[in-house]
Length: 219
Image (cartoon, rainbow, N blue to C red; front, top):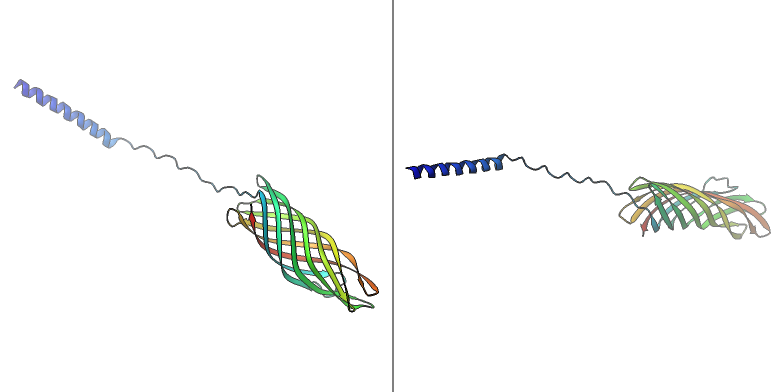
């Protein structure tokens, strides 16, 4: 009998210990989940060289024209440059060359009569300063512009290179990590040049507005 009591007591003690362990396992508070890592959109990186191309729509006016901005043309452009970035400020230089074949009334002058003016190949070297809004950048640009101008009248024609200035603004955005798209507006004003038409010397200048849409590759 004594042995049976001891066995029953040992069994009861074991069951109690097991029950206590089981209760601890059931009611143990679960560990708090690890804090989710915060995520932020990566900052845009405009630094580096780039090249691109696009379409242009130009409308301009030769001085002494009485028909307003009737020199119009749809053309193309290629451009390239280099950007540097400091925080949200993006700055650098860019060059482009374009052709739209704008032609229109250039007024008239005796004894030649009616004149026709044409702007052919044109280009620029400019500085750019922009503000990164990730993935967009808004920017301003200004610099030197050069164009080939042709004047015709009285059965004669003459061509001259004219220098001037160009100013504008645009919006550019990343399409992928290294592909960009842009829309840009520029105003250009070129110096007057003297054209020799037969025995007459005629002075004409030119200014125009240009809307440019392009895509580029950043290296």
